[in-house]
Figure 1 (cartoon, one colour):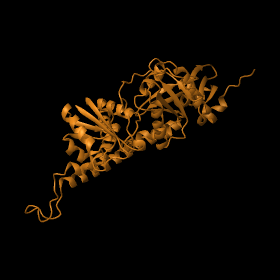
Figure 2 (cartoon, helix red, strand yellow):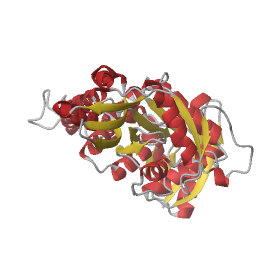
Figure 3 (tube, one colour):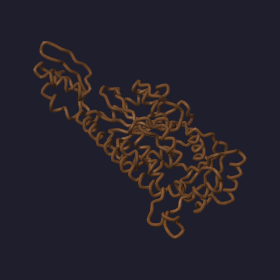
Figure 4 (cartoon, one colour):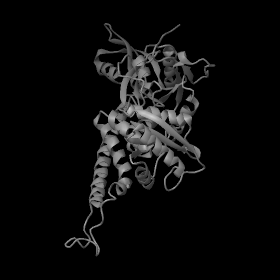
Amino acid sequence: MAGLAAASMDQAERSDDVSMDELWRLAETAGAEPVGAVLQTRDKPNPHSFLGMGKVQELKDLVENEGCDLVMFDNDLTPSQARVLEEALGVRVLDRTGLILDIFAQRAHTREGKLQVELAQYRYLLPRLTGMWTHLKRQAGTSAPIGTRGPGETQLETDRRHIRRRIQKLSEELEQVRRVRGTQRRQRERNAVPVVALVGYTNAGKSTLLNTLTGDSIQTGDRLFDTLDTTTRRLDLAEGGQALLSDTVGFIRKLPTELVDAFKATLEELTYADLLLHVIDISNPDWETQARVVDDLIVRLGAGQTPCLRVYNKCDAYFGRLPSGEDEICVCARTGEGTAALLYAVGRKLSGDLTRVELRVPYDQSGLVERLRREANVLDVRYTDEGAEVLAVVRPALRDAVRPYEVERHG
């Protein structure tokens, strides 16, 4: 079992009933059984123990009465604060970042995802090693046993060097992942295939929406961070044409810096997308705050100038006045309601670069037809005595190549 604790702090770090509810769900997602919560309001945290000593005693009583073996904090703790709290409470202490990292470690399935989580874990662990090895003394000085005086090397120092080497290796492997992604991205650009990225708060329904729009069957669930590894599928647009639709890891308030840095290889895809679909769970009472968290992270990741549609999901469970605007679409991803309008809006956003053409391609230019199949959206092909009659939607990169074969319609 696990107890939950948080202390209110200034600005973005402040905890409240909403964030405590979220912490409770995070704990359940990680596999814990929460049994209680303690919330303290302070102007600033106690630099020594984070909570005031009276609140620490209250928490200790809860731990003993409920038989807890773990206490989770809604804020990040310094290594020394965590060490003091563990000594005072007599159980293991985990802060919000450590909890989220644990969930990510459970959910990562692809090699890339596992690399990113491991890198984030090591970056989180490195400054906390001292507290894990307080029982070790440096093997030097007059009090050292005979034969061990001198510079020596403690287990702590060995572990630090090992972790630094591992961080360097993981960083190099992820840099290779970024290079591969760059190659794939350039290929997509050559093929003129637009990319649409799903972004949103965790559990907003992004994966369900991807399934509905593409006919896929990616596993979904009512759990935080149910999707961690990026998924990309082809999307057929309402007015013809295709795009690539990518699902990304869900965001959350107080998203650990270690995770943002480690997941850059994945998250930087947002900066290269042609369009973002910001999926918002409008049935959540805190949806406006969640939307702001996502908007802030989009800017932080360098994608603030990317065109964006706000997709309000779970509208069937919302009883207020629904948002309406040129770039706002209301849907129910579970039933498919509103997705036709969404596909039309996506096509409209992307259509500035698309042109529908009717072509008559001679047989001695059959290579162009194959190129169209690879690099455009071919709507229809008919073969006649004169050649292939092709109806297609093309991007600007193909306009010069197809122009000599366009069929002129009169009247």
